[in-house]
Image 1 (cartoon, rainbow, N blue to C red):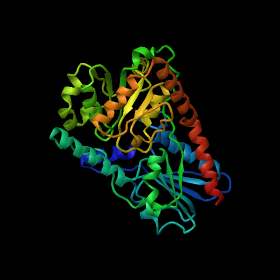
Image 2 (tube, helix red, strand yellow):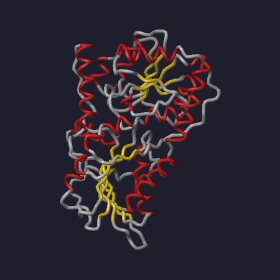
Image 3 (cartoon, helix red, strand yellow):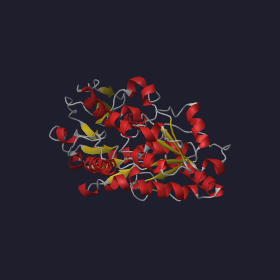
Image 4 (cartoon, rainbow, N blue to C red):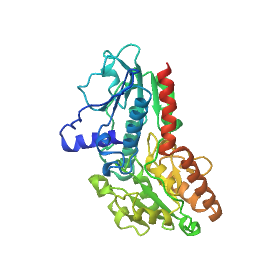
Length: 383
């Protein structure tokens, strides 16, 4: 998520991330009041297909949210989630926060204003604890302490909200149940849609697995996958992600990444590229034992390419009757799931791949996100 990337950059550069000026989208018609969205502003200048939007859904989603409220007759103000100086207008009907603004704005907002937490991840306490638990497990297995990469700043957003929106499934929703607030799921959109790889021979590719992820190798379970496949030479793993950017992780797992015959380290990949299309044609499954997600976009994108998801429940991706559940976030759990998948017949793999592809085409596209969010926004403004 963009929020975690900003946190990571702040840690690495030791300098503050500067927010862009607030943006305002006005209506020519009589206004129904103002909506404030604390998210990201750069997509309104660069567009949701800009180079830095590659692989992420947030640029499209924030533009779509703003457009919907404007079309519903509201003045819309967009600020960066980390803007600590902005004061919401006195006619604010809806205040939508990604993380940490609602408690700061509480005394500034009209009493009638509805406060909405737009949760792009699970609750910070669950997420932070999950990553630290994974790091402690590496310490116990390998005798090395790695630095956390995905720790989220604490906030009381869940306490100050009237309604919570999540992009993931029951796992993410469950992380906020303690707050006793209404929760609405609006399934994550997808940054990519692909044609189904009809020419793929699943009898050959069912033993080829892909791990793909962004920041936070341990958080996203790459350590577990590397250790598991190092013990399963009969299966093949391709790793797409910038593991080299996390120096302590790369140092610890250099042997697995670079010198293990059945593990192929590709590095970062543009999922709109021919290189990724080739991977989709030669692999059957995406394996992703994440410890905490608000809806794993990388898995959704891979499902759009015809890959079958093999995930922990914490990935917050619906597995239906097509995916494989990694029952526990451990090396043994990954091995069990991968071997279970590899023993499926070619017909079973093809059937699951088709079902996976149809699922994301039905639930996780830009058009479906826009439809679902419009219904949610319309209902809010009726109150």
